[in-house]
Picture 1 (tube, rainbow, N blue to C red):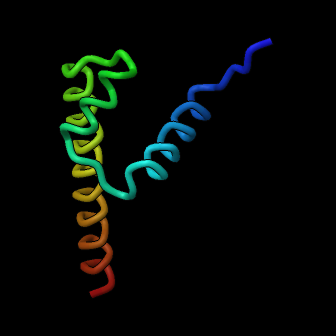
Picture 2 (cartoon, one colour; picture 1 turned 180 degrees about the horizontal axis):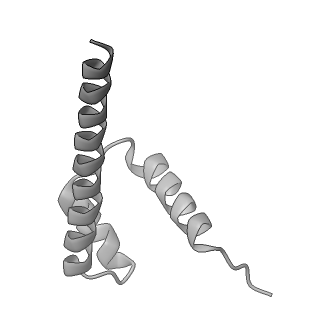
Length: 75
């Protein structure tokens, strides 16, 4: 019987394999090329990049806003 992996397991294994193979950083073009080898379109990669990086910016902005609010509260 072939092995099956949950989505979270697949994501974790692929992310770790990429770290082992490419190190800590990957160029955008390498990311697009690797995704292409897995049958993922450039458009899907571009959309995913925008969502992931946009989410990080949103979380960073929210963290800064909360920190500022706490500082004001204690001041």
